[in-house]
Length: 175
Image (cartoon, rainbow, N blue to C red):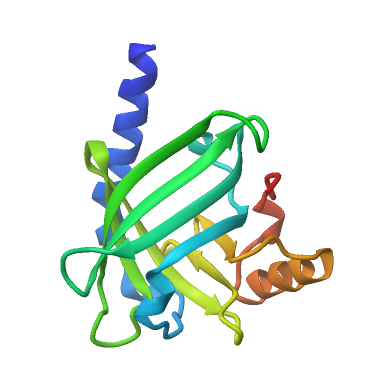
């Protein structure tokens, strides 16, 4: 078990350390979002598989305002195995990196020096769902305020594809 945690910490330390060195040219185009985007609970509808979320279903991210206007307190959670399974959560502190402009780029620092960058690439006109990714499109997430219909899910996946993401890499955990 100790080797597992060493690997876990090492992987995310490396990912967080290298994240700032991605080139600006490789970054996808973001969309403007308001500060209201970073309030309330978003359900995780689709994601790229990663061992960190293996076995996780009913995922979500909850946002609330921090101490300053550009700070966002984040709770990411999921249920283990099934929607009634054990709740697993992690808390982080986000900073909106482009607060004076689009408000679409957020860097979240989690415990153990783990850092993720989340760029909002698309937000639906009715503001009920959005797509975010890391700056190099390695990871991509689809979030919504409610569980979508099958038709709406198809639309979400189609939009992710139009943004340049290989949607064959997505998984759709049970809501």
